[in-house]
Image 1 (cartoon, rainbow, N blue to C red):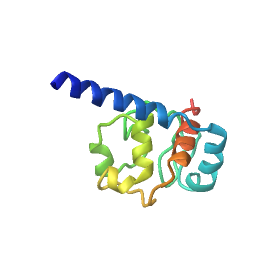
Image 2 (cartoon, one colour):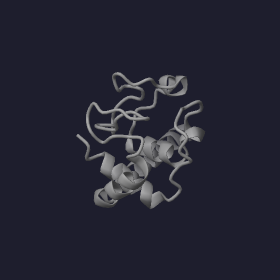
Image 3 (cartoon, rainbow, N blue to C red):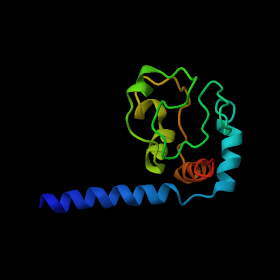
Image 4 (cartoon, one colour):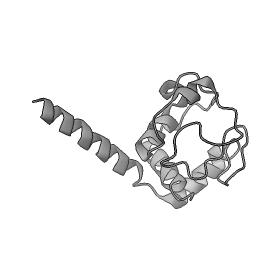
Length: 123
C-alpha cells in the first residue's frame, strides 16, 4: 500500500512538471514582456527589482550573484523546476513566505505554462 502511494505521488509530480512545460514559449515571451519584465530581466547578469531569470529552470533558489534575496527565498531549498515555477508564479507570497515579490500571482494556468515554457528557453 505504501509503495502504491509513493508511486502515485511520484507520477503526479512528473505529470505536473510535464504540464507546466506544455506551454507556448512565444505566447509566454509576450506575457513575460507585459507582466514580468518590469521587475525581472531575461538576460544573464542583469538584475532589476527582482533577480535575472536567465537559466532559471533547474537552478537552485537564491543563486543569482549580486542580488539581495529575502530571508524567505534564502531558506527555500526547492529547485526551480517547471512545476515549482508554476506553483510559485500562481501565488508567490503564498508559496514562499517572506519573499519580497509583491506580485499577486498569475491565476491562469495556461498563461503560467506559457511563461514557464518561455523561461525554459532562457539558456
